[in-house]
Length: 377
Ligand SMILES: Cc1ncc(COP(=O)(O)O)c(C=O)c1O
Image (cartoon, rainbow, N blue to C red; front, side):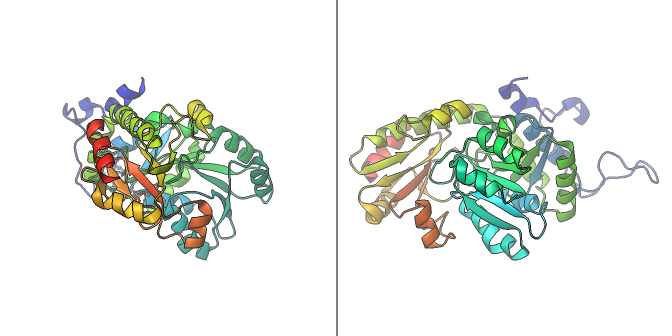
């Protein structure tokens, strides 16, 4: 089946639920055994719940994996994933990534001796020499948040596998509609389903998807033991959102690209970071690796921090808020908001300067969005 069909049908068979066309919300913490020593398909909702199972199966199929796991948040998914590793293990991490992931490595896992080594994954000689130290995994985020740098998933995966390292890819920004890391060689995909997959800014959630049966078993065990699972109500909402993922992503892509092209010509803007633009240094890779660019991108203002403050204060349709991927347009300054937890010297080295603005372009009429930015600029 093709993506749009899977997004609507995968994971749910109405005949197993009294004909219900939408998966019912199983608000039950526990499930009756069929007899002594004879459990049914579900026993206890931390280890498995039918609504969660429907979402997990749907996400696994959309990401072209064999097993999916749903968590309470994207960070809960990442935390559970990092519990695969042991003290002394090192992980090569892209040097430009979501601030919360950076904080998870540096403020939590480093203290448990699971340490991140930051490297520019686009530099194959640096990557090769970092891999020679035999890290257990390589962590990719592509496009990166908020600088919109791409990583060649195929090239990094091939090299990492030569050295026996697992490849983890955060696919939050593009969703499985525009990019399938498992098909490009990654071993584990991680998502904040809070973003495009749910798409309506009314749930926080996360997911992991894998292909390999042994990895699936290990992650399934950790999910059950650590218990950071998604609740049935949230799973239902994410399942409802995912049904329209394809058409939402197409419209996010169209709106965002039109705005990016308009901003590129605006005299107040010094640089637009959008992989769908021909001016993006990795535009060719974007064309090869992805089927679209989604709705999130960033740009720099010539007037620096003051100009950013003015823009953010004057927007009327774009809401000043963190997060991304919802139907409504959001705008924010990464250096003081989503990425403020990264120490300033690291942030500046990464290129997250105070003249940088990130937008999550929603599904409003693009003419209204451009008019809003125009009056605010
Ligand atoms: C790329 C990326 N990964 C992971 C996360 C964490 O997800 P959550 O906020 O659902 O915990 C975010 C949140 O913004 C994100 O942007």
